[in-house]
Length: 521
Image (tube, rainbow, N blue to C red; front, side, top):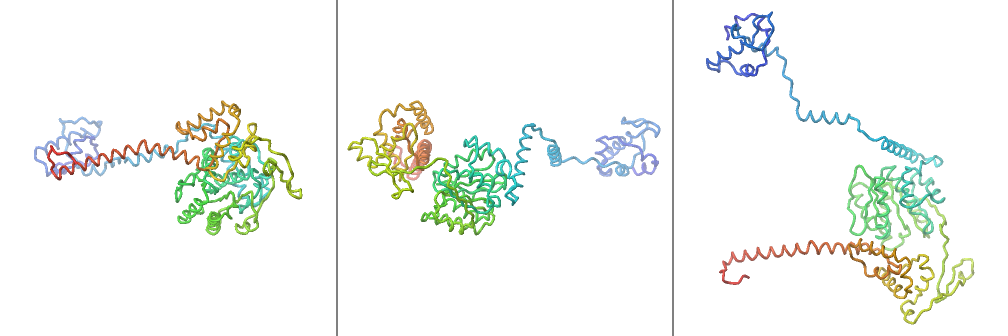
């Protein structure tokens, strides 16, 4: 090979070699390590890939008739361009992902227009909230998208707000996010103002909100009422009442949460957020029935909750509302809040007092504050007088069945007993009033209870009466849980006990090697 290399002309190094795999494999191993027969074969193969002359065209067919001298493979390897690197799977996937991201998604024009309108209204609302001037326009619906107004109409049936609600939502304290206490009579629409402020906090400021209610039944009712808003407006509604609630709450990236809690659960929730340094995530705290601050131990818990938020989070706005507040000035000092009051009532309220069979109207303009109105026109038997000493049946029959009547009782058990007692002495003609609607209602109640129905409701609903208290929903849930436990867990536990007994029997038999003719333990 060295002799051939010495005799080779310089022009021979410029000849091209074929891309033969066989020739490439031979170049990788040194010639000295091969036997003489293989060296001769390698020489024949490498020389056969040369062209006969520089003027002839290159060809991949070997010319065995005119062998050429061997070529220095080291020089050829230097001049040969490096092989193209194989693309890894990682680079390939990366290129595919980049191409997919660059490709424009096909979205319908209607969806694009809706998203554009929503984005424009949201940005306009954000600008309105950042503005301090109260005279500036707040946007389509008090700083919220027009979709919120549509949902209030669809879900609540409210077409327009009262004048006091518009005035309250336009206050400087609301626009500048200062603490506020507002007090109005019952059924004046206080809750709707609080809900609009909550929606503004969730959608515009992208902060969580906390709503504290005094009773479990109110929490459950509010969760059911606001869940549809959460689905449509893309925020979470989380219930913290009874055994429900997680401490600390789940931290979400893309959605904000509305926590609806009782007084005790709200205090625990605030404590967990303080421990995890997440209290600043609460942008708004709404306290319904603020007069509960004076309710003994529960009032002390509510006061601790408010104190911790006032001290630990300077960015959280506090809104308090109530129908009866006697010391508004003290509450303003405590919460560093402003006050808004109004005596608006959508329906005129008249108050009466019953003394035996006489009805007196409460009139503050009179000297005695009472003016005689009428006598009860209902005949009581001696048995009815013992069962109904307060003449509740006589008062109720003045209203029903043409109009509705609400009777408030002191305890849950009293609600059920009173409903049964009224039905016992009502005239049978009440059964014919809206008989079809009552039958439909009974069927729906049975379906919701998986075929079972409360025996009290089964008696009272045909007369058009029903009871309601905070334990009603819980009782239904407990019945369902009991049926599930009996259906799945009790048979499984019996089976496990039987398996353990059989295994223990086998261990005893193996231990004592009992004869087969003896009875087993």
